[in-house]
Image (cartoon, rainbow, N blue to C red):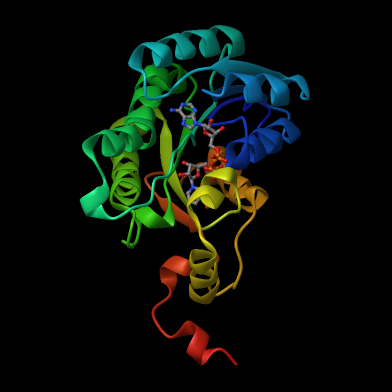
Length: 252
Ligand SMILES: NC(=O)c1ccc[n+]([C@@H]2O[C@H](COP(=O)([O-])OP(=O)(O)OC[C@H]3O[C@@H](n4cnc5c(N)ncnc54)[C@H](O)[C@@H]3O)[C@@H](O)[C@H]2O)c1
């Protein structure tokens, strides 16, 4: 890592993929602003770590995001990376997805990425920083029960391209990571045993991923090793997205 890449902001940092990403950034020597709406859990995990700034914020709330951005910039000085990871999942049939549910999912998964990126764009431009947005394989391939979740994630993939297109001339890179299934609280709340079995069948590597495996990809894209990569979507998914039908039947 370049010695100048010394800070990062991670949303949804209190647990799961966001916490694993925070830990990898800390191992790289970065100071990390940990953003989450779960104040208690955020304080608990932040107290166990050095070099972190916990900021309680709901990323779907424009005013809270503006305050978070001011605080993060004031405390970090420079913002070299923004990881828009906060997300919520809701699985159910289209006909049963009421408007409030749809808006709640869009509010965090899509509006949150839009708001945080826009609020931090001046700071990112000032140092040619990097954005990594966390979408999902559910944004790459449609599936049953994911009308709001999958659509919000597909929008995040395109929002990433818009950011790359407009902010590239300012030196800001924007890339997207699409995780496959990881056994976090978010996934376990919506993955039944049947869904778990179906994922195992459909994934060439034949297993769920780990938080660390996804965090490695995020940190690579934030680093100067990816200095000429922008507007890309990288699936950390055990091969799920690249694969067609018949996998279990054709296994040896
Ligand atoms: N776990 C998976 O299988 C999987 C697969 C694909 C994509 N993803 C995506 O990865 C990201 C992280 O997921 P995870 O599995 O680590 O989830 P998680 O539920 O373990 O952690 C998400 C964190 O985000 C926080 N959060 C949620 N809404 C927020 C909001 N509005 N403002 C601030 N913080 C908020 C939560 O409090 C929590 O700490 C999400 O965007 C998710 O959609 C996860």
